[in-house]
Picture (cartoon, helix red, strand yellow):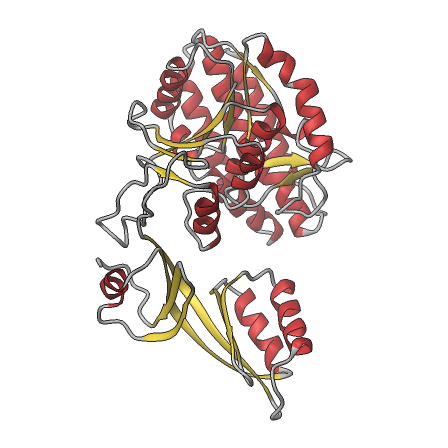
Length: 428
């Protein structure tokens, strides 16, 4: 049994959906569990719709909903010759639910409302894809992931109830796959014990694929992307990026932790626990080998990897008196960052100062700084770049740091990180 995950770019239009079908044909001898994201940038569009409605901009929200509806109907019209096909009724029902939301006068708290609205991106995409596959002799069963993945109610970043989720998936999914049938379901979404929709964090469809694979003891997982595999750098910043053929689970976790965007950070651990290989392959050239994440069978030479994070803020915090930074200070500081949902990418401390690097998130970063200023002396720099090099040497460092002003540096045996003043995209 195999688990496939297709992201938004792989179902962004009717041609992409047709290509997905051709990829599945290459694996017709295996029962497949296919996890699909919202089409294109639909999650962003639904976020905008939500914000317009909550701001009371009903005309703008109406226009945005019309665009969302037209986007999906256009793809469906191109995929289905029969304009009375049941898929159109399914689409209209989902759009009607969004319209009912737009016409409300009272709303739930933002994060709860967020999860109840953005889930429609995945529901729309999987309904269209599942129906198209069935119409083209690629028989599959459509399943709602919210009935399979049970979570707590940490809205927008829900935690999985593993025992309950595994039991549901094994009960409802395994009988279908064991008969040789395939399943189409959603990534990114689940539900709490009361049936309320939850989401697993942005880009959480990778994690969904790992959850399903863990529960069914899949042979492997493949994430289909618009790149040839896992690259050692983002080509936007590092044009000489190369594909990494094989990576260990540990290395993949480290790369994800430091900000590599190829794999969602939560994806790896469930697969490692059951030694399930994770392949990253190109949906553009599906016959090429791609990359595999697993415990390497032989010793292999680690290629240097580069991770670039722009729009970073360096915040340095000191007591207002002449006391040292101590454990009680750090507790207060971390609580502030947790309160505003800011992830710390790097930290460094001296006797009287504690410095962190975090994303410059609109509104929240400045609010956290202002709260810290009530008790501490705070200095900060914006518009910075955080560069991380795994398996570095002096040559790789020199290549990245040419003509850059270093504000902070931190090294371990395997990893070096630099905060530099210039954050513009340029060739290294």
